[in-house]
Length: 265
Image: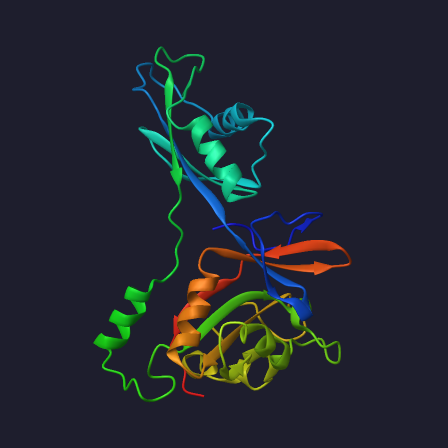
């Protein structure tokens, strides 16, 4: 959805929460809005409107508020839908108040363009989603890995969890961080095992392409909790959150993919 390259900030905002003190890790709520610009019926053959121009008009309308990012999600003859990320939930609410119900006068159109804004629904599994999946799969809830207990993480910056010995992420460091939510049974980082790349993807645990050894910027991992409570707490705590790490006094952010999964360690 949003860019995954870590971005540096001098201030993370009051909404950020400490995730792991020893590793300077934080969690920050994502503030994403869906902006729909309703287009009037075009009556002149060949008439068009620039999505870039609409985006710039939206940015000017909320000045001095700045959008962290803004991209076109859908465009057709009836409307243009943008998705924009803002610095905080507080700023998001101010932006919605400014833009929702507003209009834009665009040269060449007799009618003004109407703007509708709401908080975007982010893609993240709910308790209902994973409970229904495991129930339908007829798993044995008494066996680790066959019940909802494992969190899958992807696009984690390698440098954030690197011990500095071999350039690879440390399972120990990740375990310490994820134990903020409950006791961890096991941690598996596929790129730490050079044989995984040669294995069938169905059993290697490697889900993301481009995670080959020697050129890794991000890594993926599986974290299995001792109990369902730890798993559920982790999923609830990480829902719609960006991760952040303080390095040399500055904050670097990353949008880390989080999913529930089935893993037999």
